[in-house]
Amino acid sequence: MFFIFSKVLAFLLYPLLYVFVLLLVAIFSKNAKRKRKCLLYGVGLLYLFSNSFLINRFAKVWDVAPAQLENGKVYSAVIVLGGFSSDDNKGKGMFSPAADRFIQGVLLQKTGRVKKILITGGNGNLNPSSYREGAWTKDQLKDMQVPDSCILIEDQSRNTLENASLTKIVLQQHNQRPPYLLVTSAFHMRRSLRIFKKMGIDVIPYPCNYIAGTGNMSFGELIPDADSLNKWSSYIKEVVGVTVNLISGRG
View 1 (tube, rainbow, N blue to C red):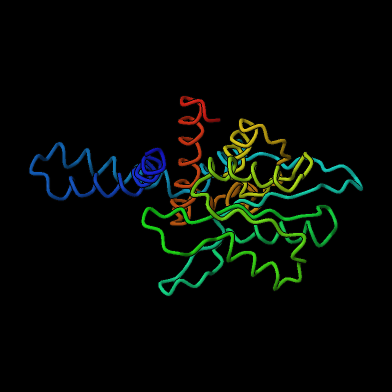
View 2: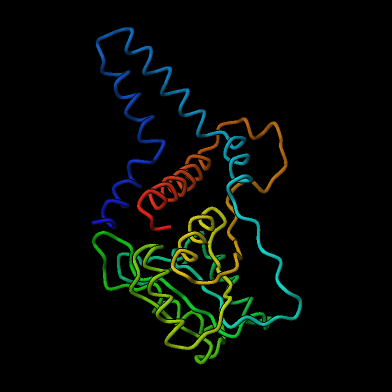
């Protein structure tokens, strides 16, 4: 039930949905005053969420800074959260814009900072196919010449809560000693960190895939940008997720 609720809530959090509703009311309303108000609110909301200035400032506050890793220390495992791939209409896996999660995990193993890579992710769709991100990623890791002995896979989780709970079982089964490096997108790290620590998993944040907040302030940030709408959707989902988890005691 919580899984379905989270999916519905995510849909309702898209800023463009409310812009669309307001503009739709403005077009079809016969009340002149309501028409003007909805048009004004719709355009204002669209500009608010489509300028990169606001999202960049918010991201700099929200994103968790990477922890300073100890010089020469080799960690037992890096936990890489899924969400960096999906399947096409033929069930074939493909990388998404969040593929930096996969890249950073591989780099950590290749440079000797970690012994094992643990990929956690199944299929988070409401109507899932047989595709499992963890299983697909194992093949990609092998193609990158990562030894099979260095790969741990959890491919049943559907969301971050399940990532943490099922990952904990895998770590215990394979006697991996903490602390572990936790790799996920910068916007997703704050919520992930809270959930994993709530589960009693000692993790060190290793954020990547920065989608906002990395550039210097410029006039161009005030110009409407469609990409900012997607960025806000990601961050709003995280803020609400942290709030819901706090209220429910999940993290």
